[in-house]
Image (tube, rainbow, N blue to C red; front, side):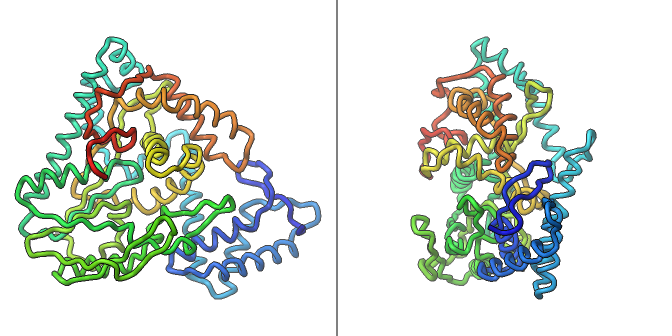
Length: 446
């Protein structure tokens, strides 16, 4: 065993020192700037550990900030300035977020579509759905079916508006990109949007960007063996961009195929070419990320952004977080469609959230239209499905300093689910609802 056995986290908790965390942080920064050499990341980690052991006084437990300072030093001294810059930027962004979250009166975020949220807030207030207490009152009065109907109609109007905006640009459009963070409802919304636009006489060809994933061994992995697929750099962005540009110009390309069972990409798998009257339709987590469509004229791209912009206050008087709604949705979807246990989804969510805050949400202002996919009634359906699990996870993670993020989220969501009136019967939910993408029972083919 090395000289360094433990490290102090920012929370003050003392946890076992794990060099793999350093390797993962270095490799993740390298991936962000186009590097894929994990062996070099491991070699640099050894330099960090050696320096740390040589300079740490006997009996001193190093703080995480001390270790990060040494990482920066080793990266720069060994000629990895670009990786060091990315590492420093990510570190500074994380620090800034922690400072903002710690303020009693934080600054309004520039990444929130305020005009849209005010419109939604006005709608939920007028429909008596602005607090869990108000929702419960309507459910107790036997109005659940009515709430479902009102919520679904509001969402369908949003999709109608998006279709109208796209149709108005049909003469010069070459691609439509539907983007948004995980479990925002992109798949269902893409299908519904395509149905409307085809009815208007428009023709589409779908491009599955998931086929551009790098081989699995090239992705960052943490000390628990969990791969990080959430960053845009998990995709071969240069190839995506090249193919989008060529397709928009009427050229033929050979798109790759990604086999998720074995985690391998096969190049030049399927020929694709757009006819003059066809438009490329793309459903992508990172559709707004600049490098995906750089050098392609904005006027030929329509960009849509999805988010469950729920405007409802929980039992503590705070608005329910959109990320918590999406976490629950992904838990349910992963369990049904990906044989991925809800607990695994919870433990992985910090990767999802970190990438969203850095690579998705900052670009929502570039979207031509924002669609709200939240259903104010959905949390009532989630309580009987997941309340017991969140209660268990809150207890399980309470004293685990390596799972602080999972504990915080489990505690917060547990309080919300405990406060809402449960609804067991989901039959009032339409079979083509965006919610069916997550709770199952959809008649749409995904």
